[in-house]
Length: 360
Image 1 (cartoon, rainbow, N blue to C red):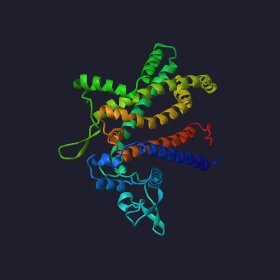
Image 2: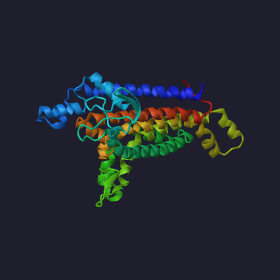
Image 3: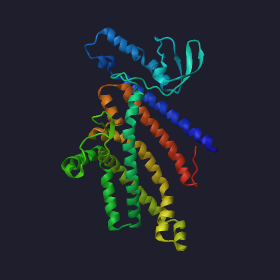
Image 4: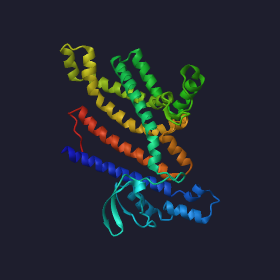
């Protein structure tokens, strides 16, 4: 099958997944018996103020119409009324930075970035709120995945080439223990041990974010606050990657091409790393790619434990305040990352092994 046709099928599947996610999260947060206008203004707000909030956030429409309007907002190509402020599809260029394409009467087709709405609490655009939180969470997830990948692959290789030895058994026990530990539990233990009891030696904090503001008002990076959340988030991936690498390496070492390489007189190092490990990496790479997206969701709990001000902590705080547009925007962003990572994983899997073809 043509590569571009395969890519088109993958992208189409991803779009359908995003549509399903939008429907589910919209229904979840819009069927709850919560008066968002009252939550925003307080229970003593007058009727006129409540009505104004409902109009601003389109809460005065039925849920099915609001769902269609939300689809229209998040779509890169959408129809809007640019003149009538009373229209539910009215937007300003300041809100979305749209580019008009063509008009039919008062309705204009525009191209724009997905518009996720405004926060109930701060009136800021959801995209602006998320933009300030993505970088710390991305650094945490990427750091944890890099840390887990290196250590997990090294442990898996050692375990495979020393099969049934003390080190093999020790690594298997250690990885089994790591898999059984929830990330938030590991985070609490690490925070107490290294951030509290041993803080005089480690210099680490129980709680703290990646960024801070100095007395001059400038943003500074506090890199030491990254280590404990990164370790807590990476413990389970380390264990899974180590066990998967061991299994794949043991299988690869039994293949004919390894025996042929040994018969040619190649060194054990060359056989292990150039031949066996390379051919064992496909399932490992798939696991790493999947975990990279999953760590974004795992970071939610870790960020709460360490008060690490990222995407996860923002989502939890917004949920507690019933600030549904921010929560919905966060879930959509994470779902988008999952879709993109699955697409890249399929392409990378085929690139690593020419014998593998991407099936539709």
